[in-house]
Length: 190
Image (cartoon, rainbow, N blue to C red):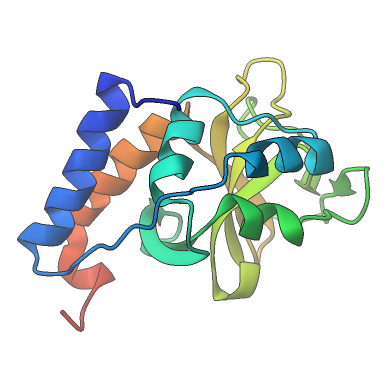
């Protein structure tokens, strides 16, 4: 059984506290079958270790839950995917990266992210919004200045990929920051 390190435990506790403080119950279903990690590795070749594995063991037993907030064109909530949910349908158009579409007036891509692609078989989807028009990825295929496990996001129209966090805990921290600062904008009905 993978245990959470102190940095991850702090952010998970903070996440639960943010939801409790604002009166929204955050249910989480633990993952009971650890074999899914090996299945995922065999299917897509990405091994989940450390922080991501510990997080999935806590929250990965149910397919969609609103957990992650990211800032792309303003803050938005992304629906979390369980590891089975992320890998069952994951086929980024085969084993080759999908080339980026030529775009005008976009800033240069962050050098930590694979250049000139909008989809890569080494990017595992963690969460999405509006049927995939915004998708958060665990990046197992970073460019040379990047690091394995960094978190990136794809945004449609214009199609571009942005850097979000150096690692999974960094994602959770920035998500918690957004939730604390902009709860009313992200959850206007509560």
